[in-house]
Length: 378
Ligand SMILES: Cc1ncc(COP(=O)(O)O)c(C=O)c1O
Image: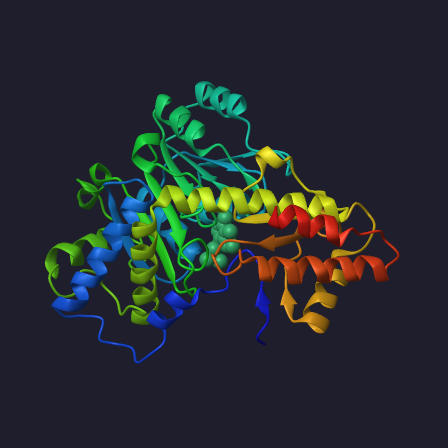
């Protein structure tokens, strides 16, 4: 069961965060707990560039997306931008809350096209636009800043799935005009899974409770009621996974001390070196380097081998876990996650590169491990 997790979430958790997670759970209420919760939520808002309110919800990223759609999109006209499996999931979620939802599909191996989105929003009025910042099934980085601005210009809310991008990619929620950002604990924040994290622009919360909701757990009206009513001791409606929140408290403190821009820079530099190493090994990136996300890399096998054979070899023989992909690219793409500081250690990359090279050589494919390691540690 225990493998080196080189997958795009959940991630290898650095020791400085793991120690905060381990240990006896504490009560999820009382003044000390309320303070820790509110401080942690406030730091998350800052890290993603917002003065808005962050809600830490027991669940996963999808719960956060469901919450955003349940709270703000009931019976609204919504547009979902889809260039991969998680764009598809956004559509599935949003369509549970409104029948009036359209999807704009884009090719899998390129980012969402701003001109097409602009034209679509000019041709027809939408109340809200949904998009993934990083489409994790392909490793593509979508233009969140630009799409947010286009949505604003056309009078639509912009709701961003930042599950694979927060604390990794540039994200300036308020400056870009993003209205709602959803993320989760188990990726860039280097924590165990267990929290959907929703950040909302404050003005959207004003007046929210004038209209009724149609869910309970996933309705931020309910979360706002508890925030106001029980603010000093229990500012949320349900029992929380206190260990995961303590890990997130630590993670957000570490990022704050380090500075979010230096964390983003670290991911940019390391992912670029890792991708050079992959190319030197003799493999092709699935997407163009300048369109790739910085917390994972999708690699094309170019028909030379089945991704599943490599994945099984690495797991069974070397104890390293990487991921496959989905749908039409399933048989020729595999994915490697480098979202946490621990995943980004050279020692882990070198084990992985050696494993891939060994597999390629055994399959009769040339692989230059020396050049790959040179590129990694240059
Ligand atoms: C972009 C994106 N959206 C949504 C999800 C779903 O998140 P969760 O599995 O935490 O519900 C993921 C998970 O990998 C993701 O990468």
